[in-house]
Image 1: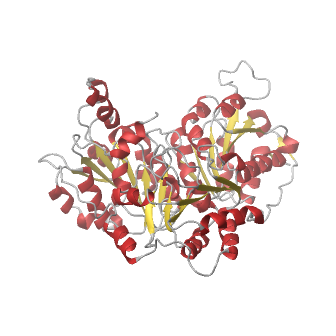
Image 2 (image 1 turned 135 degrees about the vertical axis):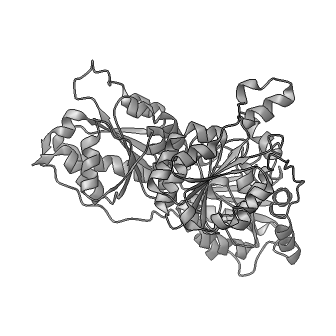
Image 3 (image 1 turned 180 degrees about the horizontal axis):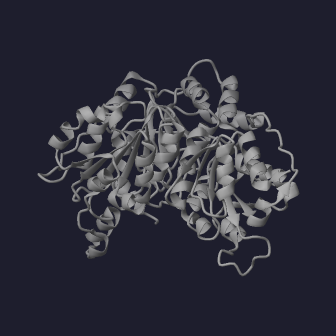
Amino acid sequence: MAKVYEILSRQLTNLGADTIFGLVGSGNFFLAESLVTHGAKFVAARHEAGALAMADAWARLTQKVGICTVHMGPGFTNIITPLVEAAKARTPLLVLTADVSTGAVTSTFAIDIDALATASGAIPERLWKNSTATQDLVRAYRRARYERRPVVFVMPQDIQAAESTAAVIAPEDNAYFSVIPDRSILEKIVSLVRDSRHPLILAGRGSVLAGARAGLEKLAEAIGALLATTANAHGLFAGNPWSIGIAGGFSSPGAVELFRQADLILAFGASLTVWTRRHGRLFPESCPIVQIDLDPAALHRQYPVTLACVGDARATAEALLELLPDKPVGQWRTPSTLQFIQEHSWINTPFEDASTENTIDPRTLSLFLEQNLPPDRILVLDSGHFMAYPVMYLSVPDEKGFVFTQALQSIGFGLPNAIGAAIAYPDRLTIAATGDGGLLLSLSELETVARYRLPILIVVYNDAAYGAEVHHFAPMGWPTSTVQFPDTNIAELARALGMHAFTVRTQRDLESLREALSDRSCYPMLLDAKVNPAVRGGEWFDLAFEGH
């Protein structure tokens, strides 16, 4: 016989778990050590919230179940905010949390984990008995994987330490679940396509999960459609000349003009949030919208679409191709449209540089990074007033090149998200774009970056403030002293941890960094960019606060 924690670790590695994020206390110590013994890589965070955010980003990029382990009591309560984010974003996560021994109701660690997990939007599951240990764990793992939600697996200490003869359950073969809509629904979509001249395919996260790029591009070519993505699918059509980028607040002015000419939107795996639709002002009111989603609950949830269709993005696209005529239907794919797309990207949209003697324009900073960083990259965004600038000017190579954990709109997760991304794809340069507020909120994980020597560039858009609040409330006449702070020497903090770090105030400072940015041995690196706090976000910023 073996201890239950040993059997659980064997079961996890047998299921394919090779990377575990966490912070260890007495309640999960033996499990964590056993996982390492059985070959798993354990990434030790400095805060439980950081550990879960790392697992979240890792899971989004690898499309596997992310695994995080935490101690009981405060170890679990510390993960609530990133747990809510993961639940809202439908990230498949397995959270292995310790709990007090059965019957230890007076323990200072005793809390109702199941109720907290449920309130966070996660699924509570439990290690019930030593004899059912592997069944309990596999059930929790499968729910995380197939329901695409965080599952909190509660492990009482006494059961973990008990002996058991529970057998390890063999993993099932990976399966692709294809749902093809009924032919009558497909024919209705085809009828709408035949009547359109300016069709547009909008791909969301569901298209990424389905591996639908090739099918959607073929479909777009067949119907003469332009291509776009939601923020969470950014990069899916990277390199396609007919792609006009992100739909929503991050859209370039040229893309907005094209969106407003559309006479049919085919939304594949896109939830059609108010941000994607610019509060109903991005697409013409008369434009029919077809929503295709594998999850029936997503249909009509955010917006009453013209036609709703339960279907997998890839399978539906391929089925539509078989019913379409040989020649393109739309009339949008012309040389003049292609030229317009090229000339009206963010890179080609002029702006007046607002850099000063002591501060740099965040747009100038972002454009310089685009021109001087390797293209094989992952861009990870924190939240804040700065956040549009990296998206506007920093390209990504594919759908695995962007991490955007903004379902809850919390700041402070950009840095731990970047750690998870860098662990997932260490051959790429991960760019963590954050504000000073978000960086300082997650400062403990700066040590994690330095300790693991990860290939990460941390770009701090440092305006010495919670800039979103400053730019939102100051124009109303409110004082903003509560959200403005003395300048922090963040570069010096990074250097104290052994990282390469530079303070950027001018274009000259940037020019001096060209060689270092191209030298992989210089990473991890931090740029403390003192951005001009007077530069205010444009329409995207007002849209972000609308309906807050």
